[in-house]
Image (cartoon, rainbow, N blue to C red; front, side, top):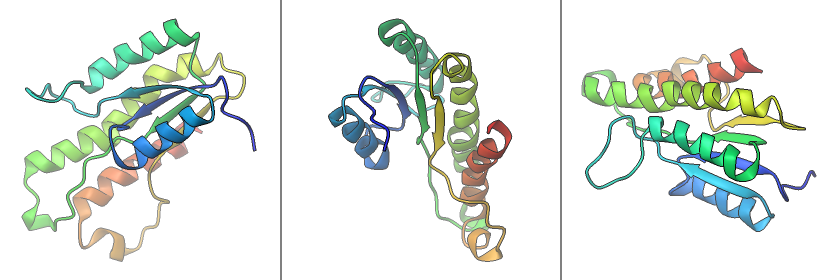
Length: 155
């Protein structure tokens, strides 16, 4: 296994859950860890937007000399059926999951191109086109699959 010691990771959605666990483990392994917010619009009580994430990426490059790994973890979830999913929630999930993954990848790729062994890791599912994944919560599955499609398009 390759060591993360001295590597710089930029992790979205690392304030809790899987993202936080990844950040803590990477830090324990000696990595430089930069975390970002997942919100598109400013919130009165929560700092950070996808746009400030772009600025944090630039700060990480200035501070640590580059980025080795991007972890696209930020995600919004609503396990609701079609009729129970408000369009505002649909837009939020697609804005964070799909658009946020694309935007952070786009901002990091020029810096990752300079890394010795660059990686982008998207915390998203394999593209399994079975109805059982879509029927109960099509809006959420579409948003998460958007992250998976970024994997196919950017690999």
